[in-house]
Image (cartoon, rainbow, N blue to C red; front, side):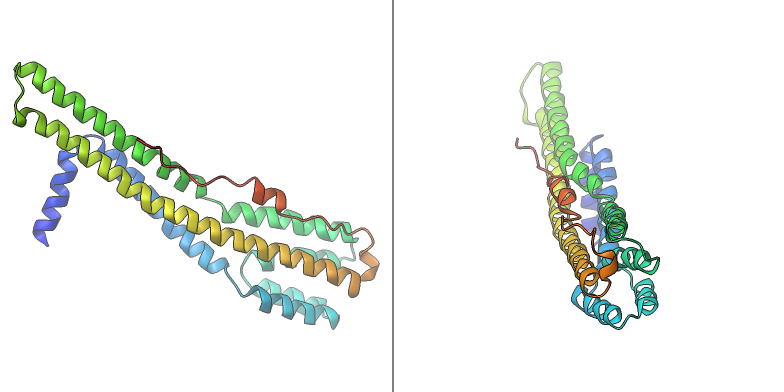
Length: 239
């Protein structure tokens, strides 16, 4: 174990100055990944059970019970439904209910996507930093040849080693970060679908249970524009 630790430390030293920004990028990516895992795991709830319970409360006319239930339930779906039920309790029109849910959905979506741009940036720049280290190492190798006036393996080995180490380090950082980014995109899309389903359920309740406020409720999707406008997966630049 000590030898392995020594080897890793020696590789870091041999990689040169470019290993420091790569280390920073790896720590930043790891921190965001852990934070997103915690946030998305906490936000993921059984949407079907929540919607069934809310439908039961609404059809019994127990709006206050529904509000207390949603206040105790974490997650974006519960937050969107809570915004709608608050407007229903205030006897607002259907358009006010849906606008409140749309606003709550945007806030929840912004919270869910927080940190994604950092992952995309790390996945993009880590290989670029590694490639810059490669160029740096080759410049050092040719500089050593120029100074010596002769080509010897020992002169160019150091520069080539730097080039290989930084390239490998950049790819080792970018690949898992890219995988994590795509995984989080999938999880967020699922949560967006839950919120859309919650909006559809609330619209049905406005017509079936609270018809007085349903006349001006629209049928347009609440989150479709956000889903299409979301950032594309990061692309690792080809070399």
